[in-house]
Length: 222
Image 1 (cartoon, rainbow, N blue to C red):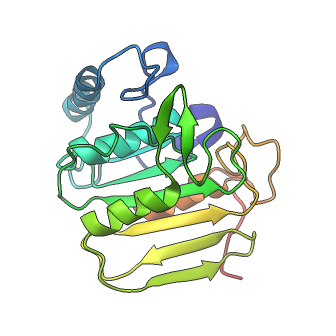
Image 2 (cartoon, helix red, strand yellow):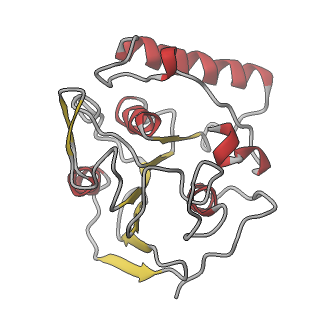
């Protein structure tokens, strides 16, 4: 996460937690339980609060793939801690959106339509079903009590940004046509058709955090 997101360039306190055996609950292959991972995150947040001057109204989470699913799980179970979360190519396994708080939480989802690992339309991995992007956005639309239209704009790099309106907490989706299972524009992306630093820029913009990696390209409205 640190290498491909380059969040260190942001004007923020940044932590890069790692799950046991590179996995987070409630994925079916996780070595830890959901409560163990939630307690781990609580301990990290408490440690940061004890060490730095933390704005409790500006704590965010972001993740890729299984980490994206876990960021969604944090929004589900810890909405009093996290103001917003960003999920990229996220795997929404069964259990991630179970018994969630109804407290609105800001949500940005980024996903490529040709993701070969976590299908945009949902599917099954590790003998466990995972939800489609549309299903997850529908759940969050209801949770954030979005009453207005969805505003869709085409970006100069070809991605489409959808923004729900009249919500109690922001909800946004960026669809990357033909996009794969990567952090778009990150150092792990073999193709950079969306432009260098795209996902990092989009996430930090959604969170309202200044500071970007030096090679970040502009991604305006077409």
